Image 1 (cartoon, rainbow, N blue to C red):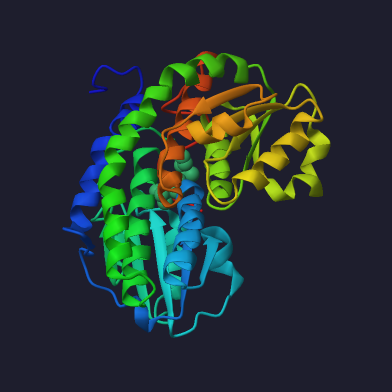
Image 2: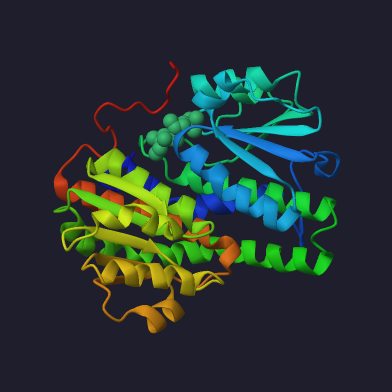
Length: 361
Ligand code: M6R
């Protein structure tokens, strides 16, 4: 049932080109994005996203997409905070809940809080018959199939893919994306499963790097823009299954505190595809290197050509339009954590103290 893989997590990581194409096929229609159920994003003035764990990280990536592509303001909250905060919910706000299981207690309670106040309750779920799906006005299924590993992999990537589709649909409806740009985005989406398959070829490199990362007691992850939430994804995956303490920071925050941690024992993983923020991230990376921090730069071939000098290790990812980079950079986040955990001999699929579905608060 693990299809020849040592762990469910490995199987699920390798299923991603297929599961990603499964969700893309539900909303790509020729050169257009057509949502499985219509929703009018032109009639809302704000999106409130709520989720826990990895699903919360997917929402944080989606905030960048909705704001840039659809010019729609987004707030993102952790469900356990949102449900008790007594935040006002305007009648024009769209509330959007993201959950793989659809049964997470805090996310469900947050949904019930917003119900009756928000313009509509939307959800992005993997289990279509779940409580969160049933209690939503519209549930958008992500078609990732059953995910067994406690550390979410293919569901996270499909959450991203579905949220990106919603952002593109919103951009079109709100007149911020014209037909030519939509066609360009759709063409890019169609290439993504192939690029994910290419991204998986970094596995051997990740395995080699893992033996070095496994010696660390702390690891820092840095990124800017949508790579900032992806740094959180890298840190969360690593903590969950390897039990190594990891933290994520926005690169620009480095000098506001965490740089004090940097010495020659600290691996710093930097997610930096070649995008308009690349040079800024590189200058933060150089601040780490000047203090003997060991930088693992995760970038593409252009980035590697420009910024490999003095770097501890470089992991070269396929080149991709920066809009899609979060999906592709999920792969090194997963594989670095997976192989570090395997190297340490922890229980990858059932890490200590964790449950796949958190149905109590
Ligand atoms: O089922 P949900 O998506 O609501 O679960 C939320 C979190 O418990 C979940 O994403 C958790 O953080 C994962 N173990 C992360 O890999």
